[in-house]
Amino acid sequence: PLYPTAPIKMISTETKHSSLSFGKSYRRKGKTTRPALTEEQKQEIKEAFELFDTDKTGTIDYHELKVAMRALGFNVQKQEVIKIMKEYDRNQTGKINFSDFAEIMGEKVLQRDPEEEMKKAFALFDDDDTGFISIKNLRRVSRELGEVLSDEELTAMIEEFDKDQDGEISVEEFMAIMKQTSLY
Image (cartoon, rainbow, N blue to C red; front, top):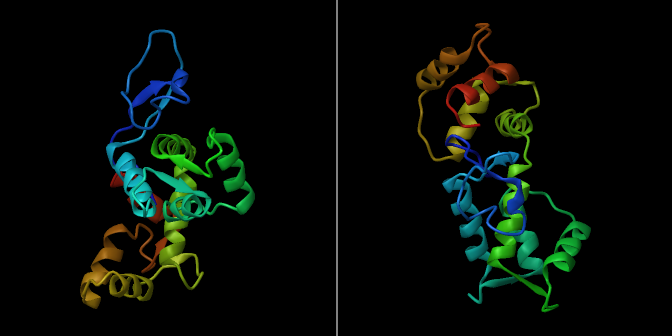
């Protein structure tokens, strides 16, 4: 998934169908502005497109679009992908180009709710649905990531952010960590 890691830039709302995703960021006098993609987000969108443009034509078809969108963390349904293809496949080739993909994904990324994204990230840790991240949860995640951490190290991680000192990280504590570290 794409997560903002840099201060949000601003661009004019008049950039729809132009440089929203990959153009210049600017502010016009008297115009409403909205957040722009970070460089990291732009790069992730570009990499997803290139990964699924398997024939390297600069275009992707319906199936590649669906998989690329899912790879970027969007659980899209068939009808939504069909609608996007109808709107952006202007020449009716059955494909869309990178510019259109960047615009589509840029809009989707900017519409994400950071609070919801943090709750989804929390749920990845809380695989036993207790509403808390325990040492057991951290051990599993560290193993899945190939990190070898001792129980002492895992306990220290929990203790550092466990404000109510119950030995586990709650959703609220997790969200505070994410906000504090500017991962959202």
